[in-house]
Figure 1 (cartoon, helix red, strand yellow):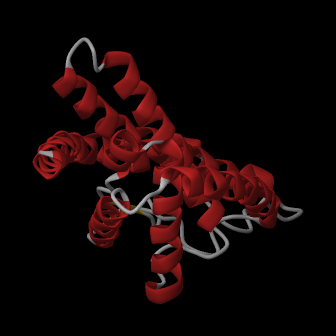
Figure 2 (cartoon, rainbow, N blue to C red):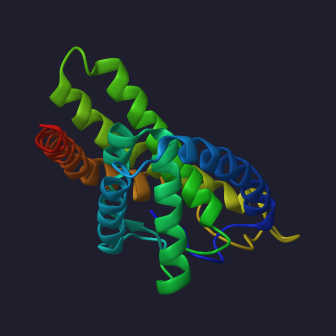
Length: 215
């Protein structure tokens, strides 16, 4: 799902940087009030898990990748803003240290995975948790992968229309929506199943661990 450098036009990533910067600042203030000594070790451990999951990536046609991410797990356990910052940190480290995902594409990757993925997962969890906890957790994990993948596919597929030369040849990513949507979204529909299972198991493990520590 990571978008590399050179795929996204400045007309797209510059506004995305401005939007993401505003959200990063707001999230930092929210998280500063929420984070405490008891929560920090769990957030750090699950952020590290997200880092590892994102490093195990399956290449997709066109240059992007498919991978689990732990987005839904972070969101349901620690809230949307914490998940947004954690995923943004992971994406920044991977881009800077390993070249996995682009610097120019960082805000789009962060908004897609950390914002859309986390808050849609959290919404699904809050809506369905009272009806069926396991289903709510699974759906939160599944949505946290599939919806960001769809957004990434749309952003990529719009690039030929946004940035092209006088003859209409794309200057950045060359494929339109008819290619990007199935190529990016369909593999993540399957990856989302693994993400859903991970969210169920990770949430229950953290719940049991916190109960033991509080006892």
